[in-house]
Amino acid sequence: MKKTFLKITAFMAGIMVTFTLSSCNDSDDNMMELPSQRTITFENVVTPKDFVESGSFQGTGAVPVILPGQSVSVKFSAGKAQALMFATMFGASKDWFFASQQPGIKLFDTNGTAITGDVSSNVLLWDNGTKDNITGQTESKPIAQVPNVKASDLMKLNLTYNEMTSEFTLTITNTSGGTANETPFSPGVWAVSNYNGTQLLNSMPFFTPNALSNPEITDIAQMGNIDKMKAKLNANTGIMTGLSPALVVIYRGDKNPVYELGKMDAGMGLKEIAQTGNVSKLQNSLKSFPGIKGIYVAGNAPVPPGNKAMTNFKADPGDKIAYVTMFGFSNDWFYANEVSIEATAKGDLTSKTTLFDSGTGVDQYPGAGNRQALFGGTPQSEAMVISKVGTQYPVPAVQNVIKVTVN
Image (cartoon, rainbow, N blue to C red):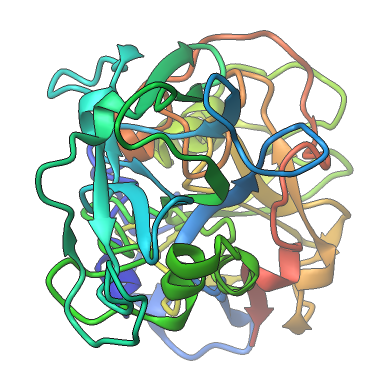
């Protein structure tokens, strides 16, 4: 796996705001080793995967091939900069397959507007280079485009787009009937590469043009067998995220000053954290909140996988601690402690941490929604109560994304 996740500098333009390490009781003494001083650390422990979504398709008849005149559709989510790659065998060949140029079919124009309608010009026909086209004898040549065959005459591609969900539907139609290259299409595979805010984690999914093939694409090109590619995709597909700097609040009382489950966002700044990672508004709002003893910010930049942010804080017996950080690759989600925590506690607090939906923006697939700050977007407004994030999307368990510890 490419270690490009270390370049996740952001959830990009929407998230890159100025954070401060100030607190409402800042002083030079605040960093001294005092008996009441603690350090809280927020570590991003998510394992980045090459693909945010992947899957397969096949014909709907008794035989799973896609015959001339038949169509099949694939639904997937994406934001600008992401692309869709797919592959399916040209059945009437020794080792040819349909796919687009890498990294896949372009889905948004330079203005961030979804591309819809006929996108057949994106499909190409490739020679896998592992079988002689006449004799079928084994050979070892680089993958190259098949000359003198126009793939778009044999396959039509049509895209539709749901802006609310940032979900595309690609319809693949076999139009080869009656042509000199009439052929069935085999079952196929598709994938959308994860985007880290600056680049795709895998810009060459499935194969590398002008290089020797691999076992997964070879099985598709020679036999229409997608099993190896499906297994590889499944192992390398998953939701990832960055985290925003975390706001840490030391307080007295029974009410968590950051949020209240089942209630609407109070407009004090939680929305800004949940949508863009900007802690400034809530930080300032809480300075006049009753019972607040200290406000701290862990980190001054987004926290990519494998990195951590921390801050020192002071607490006395009877104080409580609350914390909040954005699930960066979302529209309006945040991590926070679900239960009350004594501020003098030490150790791993991850089990007390929950992923919440602020109810202020319409959800889209994490890491593949064009209205997310990751893609420079603004969530479509909604007015729902704060709730726990459910199972609509395959989000990794809390302990597989964030680790919160106090020392």
